[in-house]
Figure 1: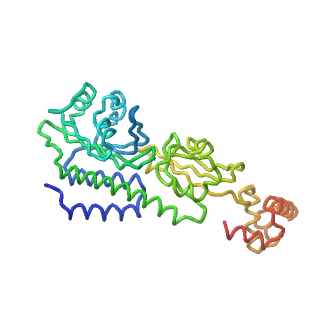
Figure 2 (figure 1 turned 120 degrees about the vertical axis):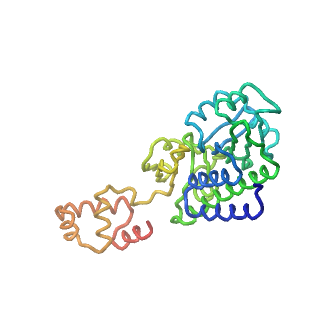
Figure 3 (figure 1 turned 180 degrees about the horizontal axis):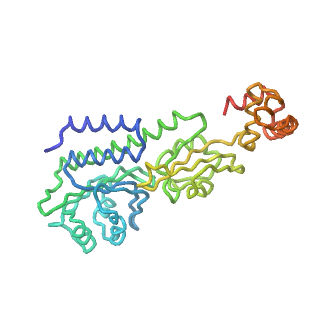
Length: 323
């Protein structure tokens, strides 16, 4: 069935609706599955990549109904990837490959024959000046597989462009809904930024005045391989690195970055004491609740005031309300 305008409009509407409800990996997985049914291809390979004169850099990838070793095998013939070569020559086209005709080489024929991929169509949502652009390679299998028609190629290109816009919308909404000064970005394991870099530069760019490009500053790259919360006093930053289950297929990380606050300087027990004091509890009440001596609470209070730069409970309470 040839896709029509109504089908495309429905796809666009659903894509943007899902962008506000799910994570980026979930959105990509749904969109590729939907396109598979709409356009009639059996399997696909997708993610973020950069195509340049020296080859292809895959920054994150996942697949639909392909064997787990597909990416590993592709790496053995990446230099012969005719689809990538075509996209390098003409970035805005849909690159196609037909096992039965047209240009061939040993790498492409081996890939095609190993996995039964007879017809291929690859498209990218090119982002000028960025290291990572979303790509989708769709495959039809079997000797009777039909070619991708012009209308199907056009549908595919427009759909992938809309997926890219929806992912950007997801990133913008995520940062718009967080507390002021808290930025969330999506990166790969090498520290290449995928989404959210514009928000990061706008909110915290002064921390790294010489930072350009998509490769994260050294400070941020240093935490990408270490999930958990990282305190960086030299940059006055707190960074939470997460490898969320929903991103594991693509091996992506989410970094949540905010400015270091005076409360971050407190120990866990000092934080407990400070919170009780800011709630109006006396030293005796705080000591009873925590099961310590009042003198211990008084000593901790002095430490809290020195670390946070305040000298009374009202100011301490203000720190918690602005946290």
